[in-house]
Length: 130
Image (cartoon, rainbow, N blue to C red; front, side, top):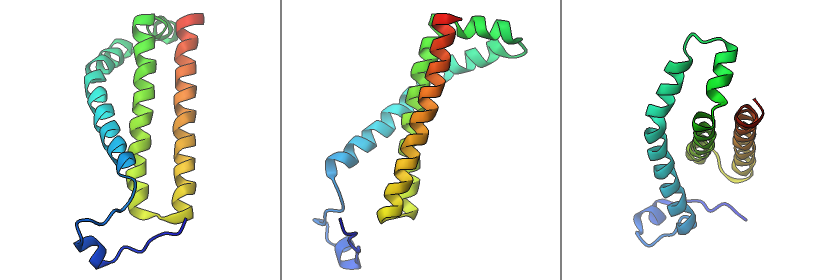
């Protein structure tokens, strides 16, 4: 797929299509929904951080091992990584194009998946196996 050079005339024409409209709308909605979920989870996250302040490891394991705390934290971690991937996508779109953009998006996606899998696995281990 060749990269199209965007000219002044293309920008001036309101009927010019720059990309996949459905993908852009999905990205927009996903970014807003994950941001709203992050705000909603903020109070819960602050509760956990304040609860764990100054605690030693066994107390931390007992708090995070509670299913009412660990499972919502795992869900929050997944939502945060989706939001992180979309935010980095916006930044990468601004500065890169073509093959380098696709490579960086692949690396961005792999990093976000790695963070989500490692974090969720650690929390699920605490919840189900202590």
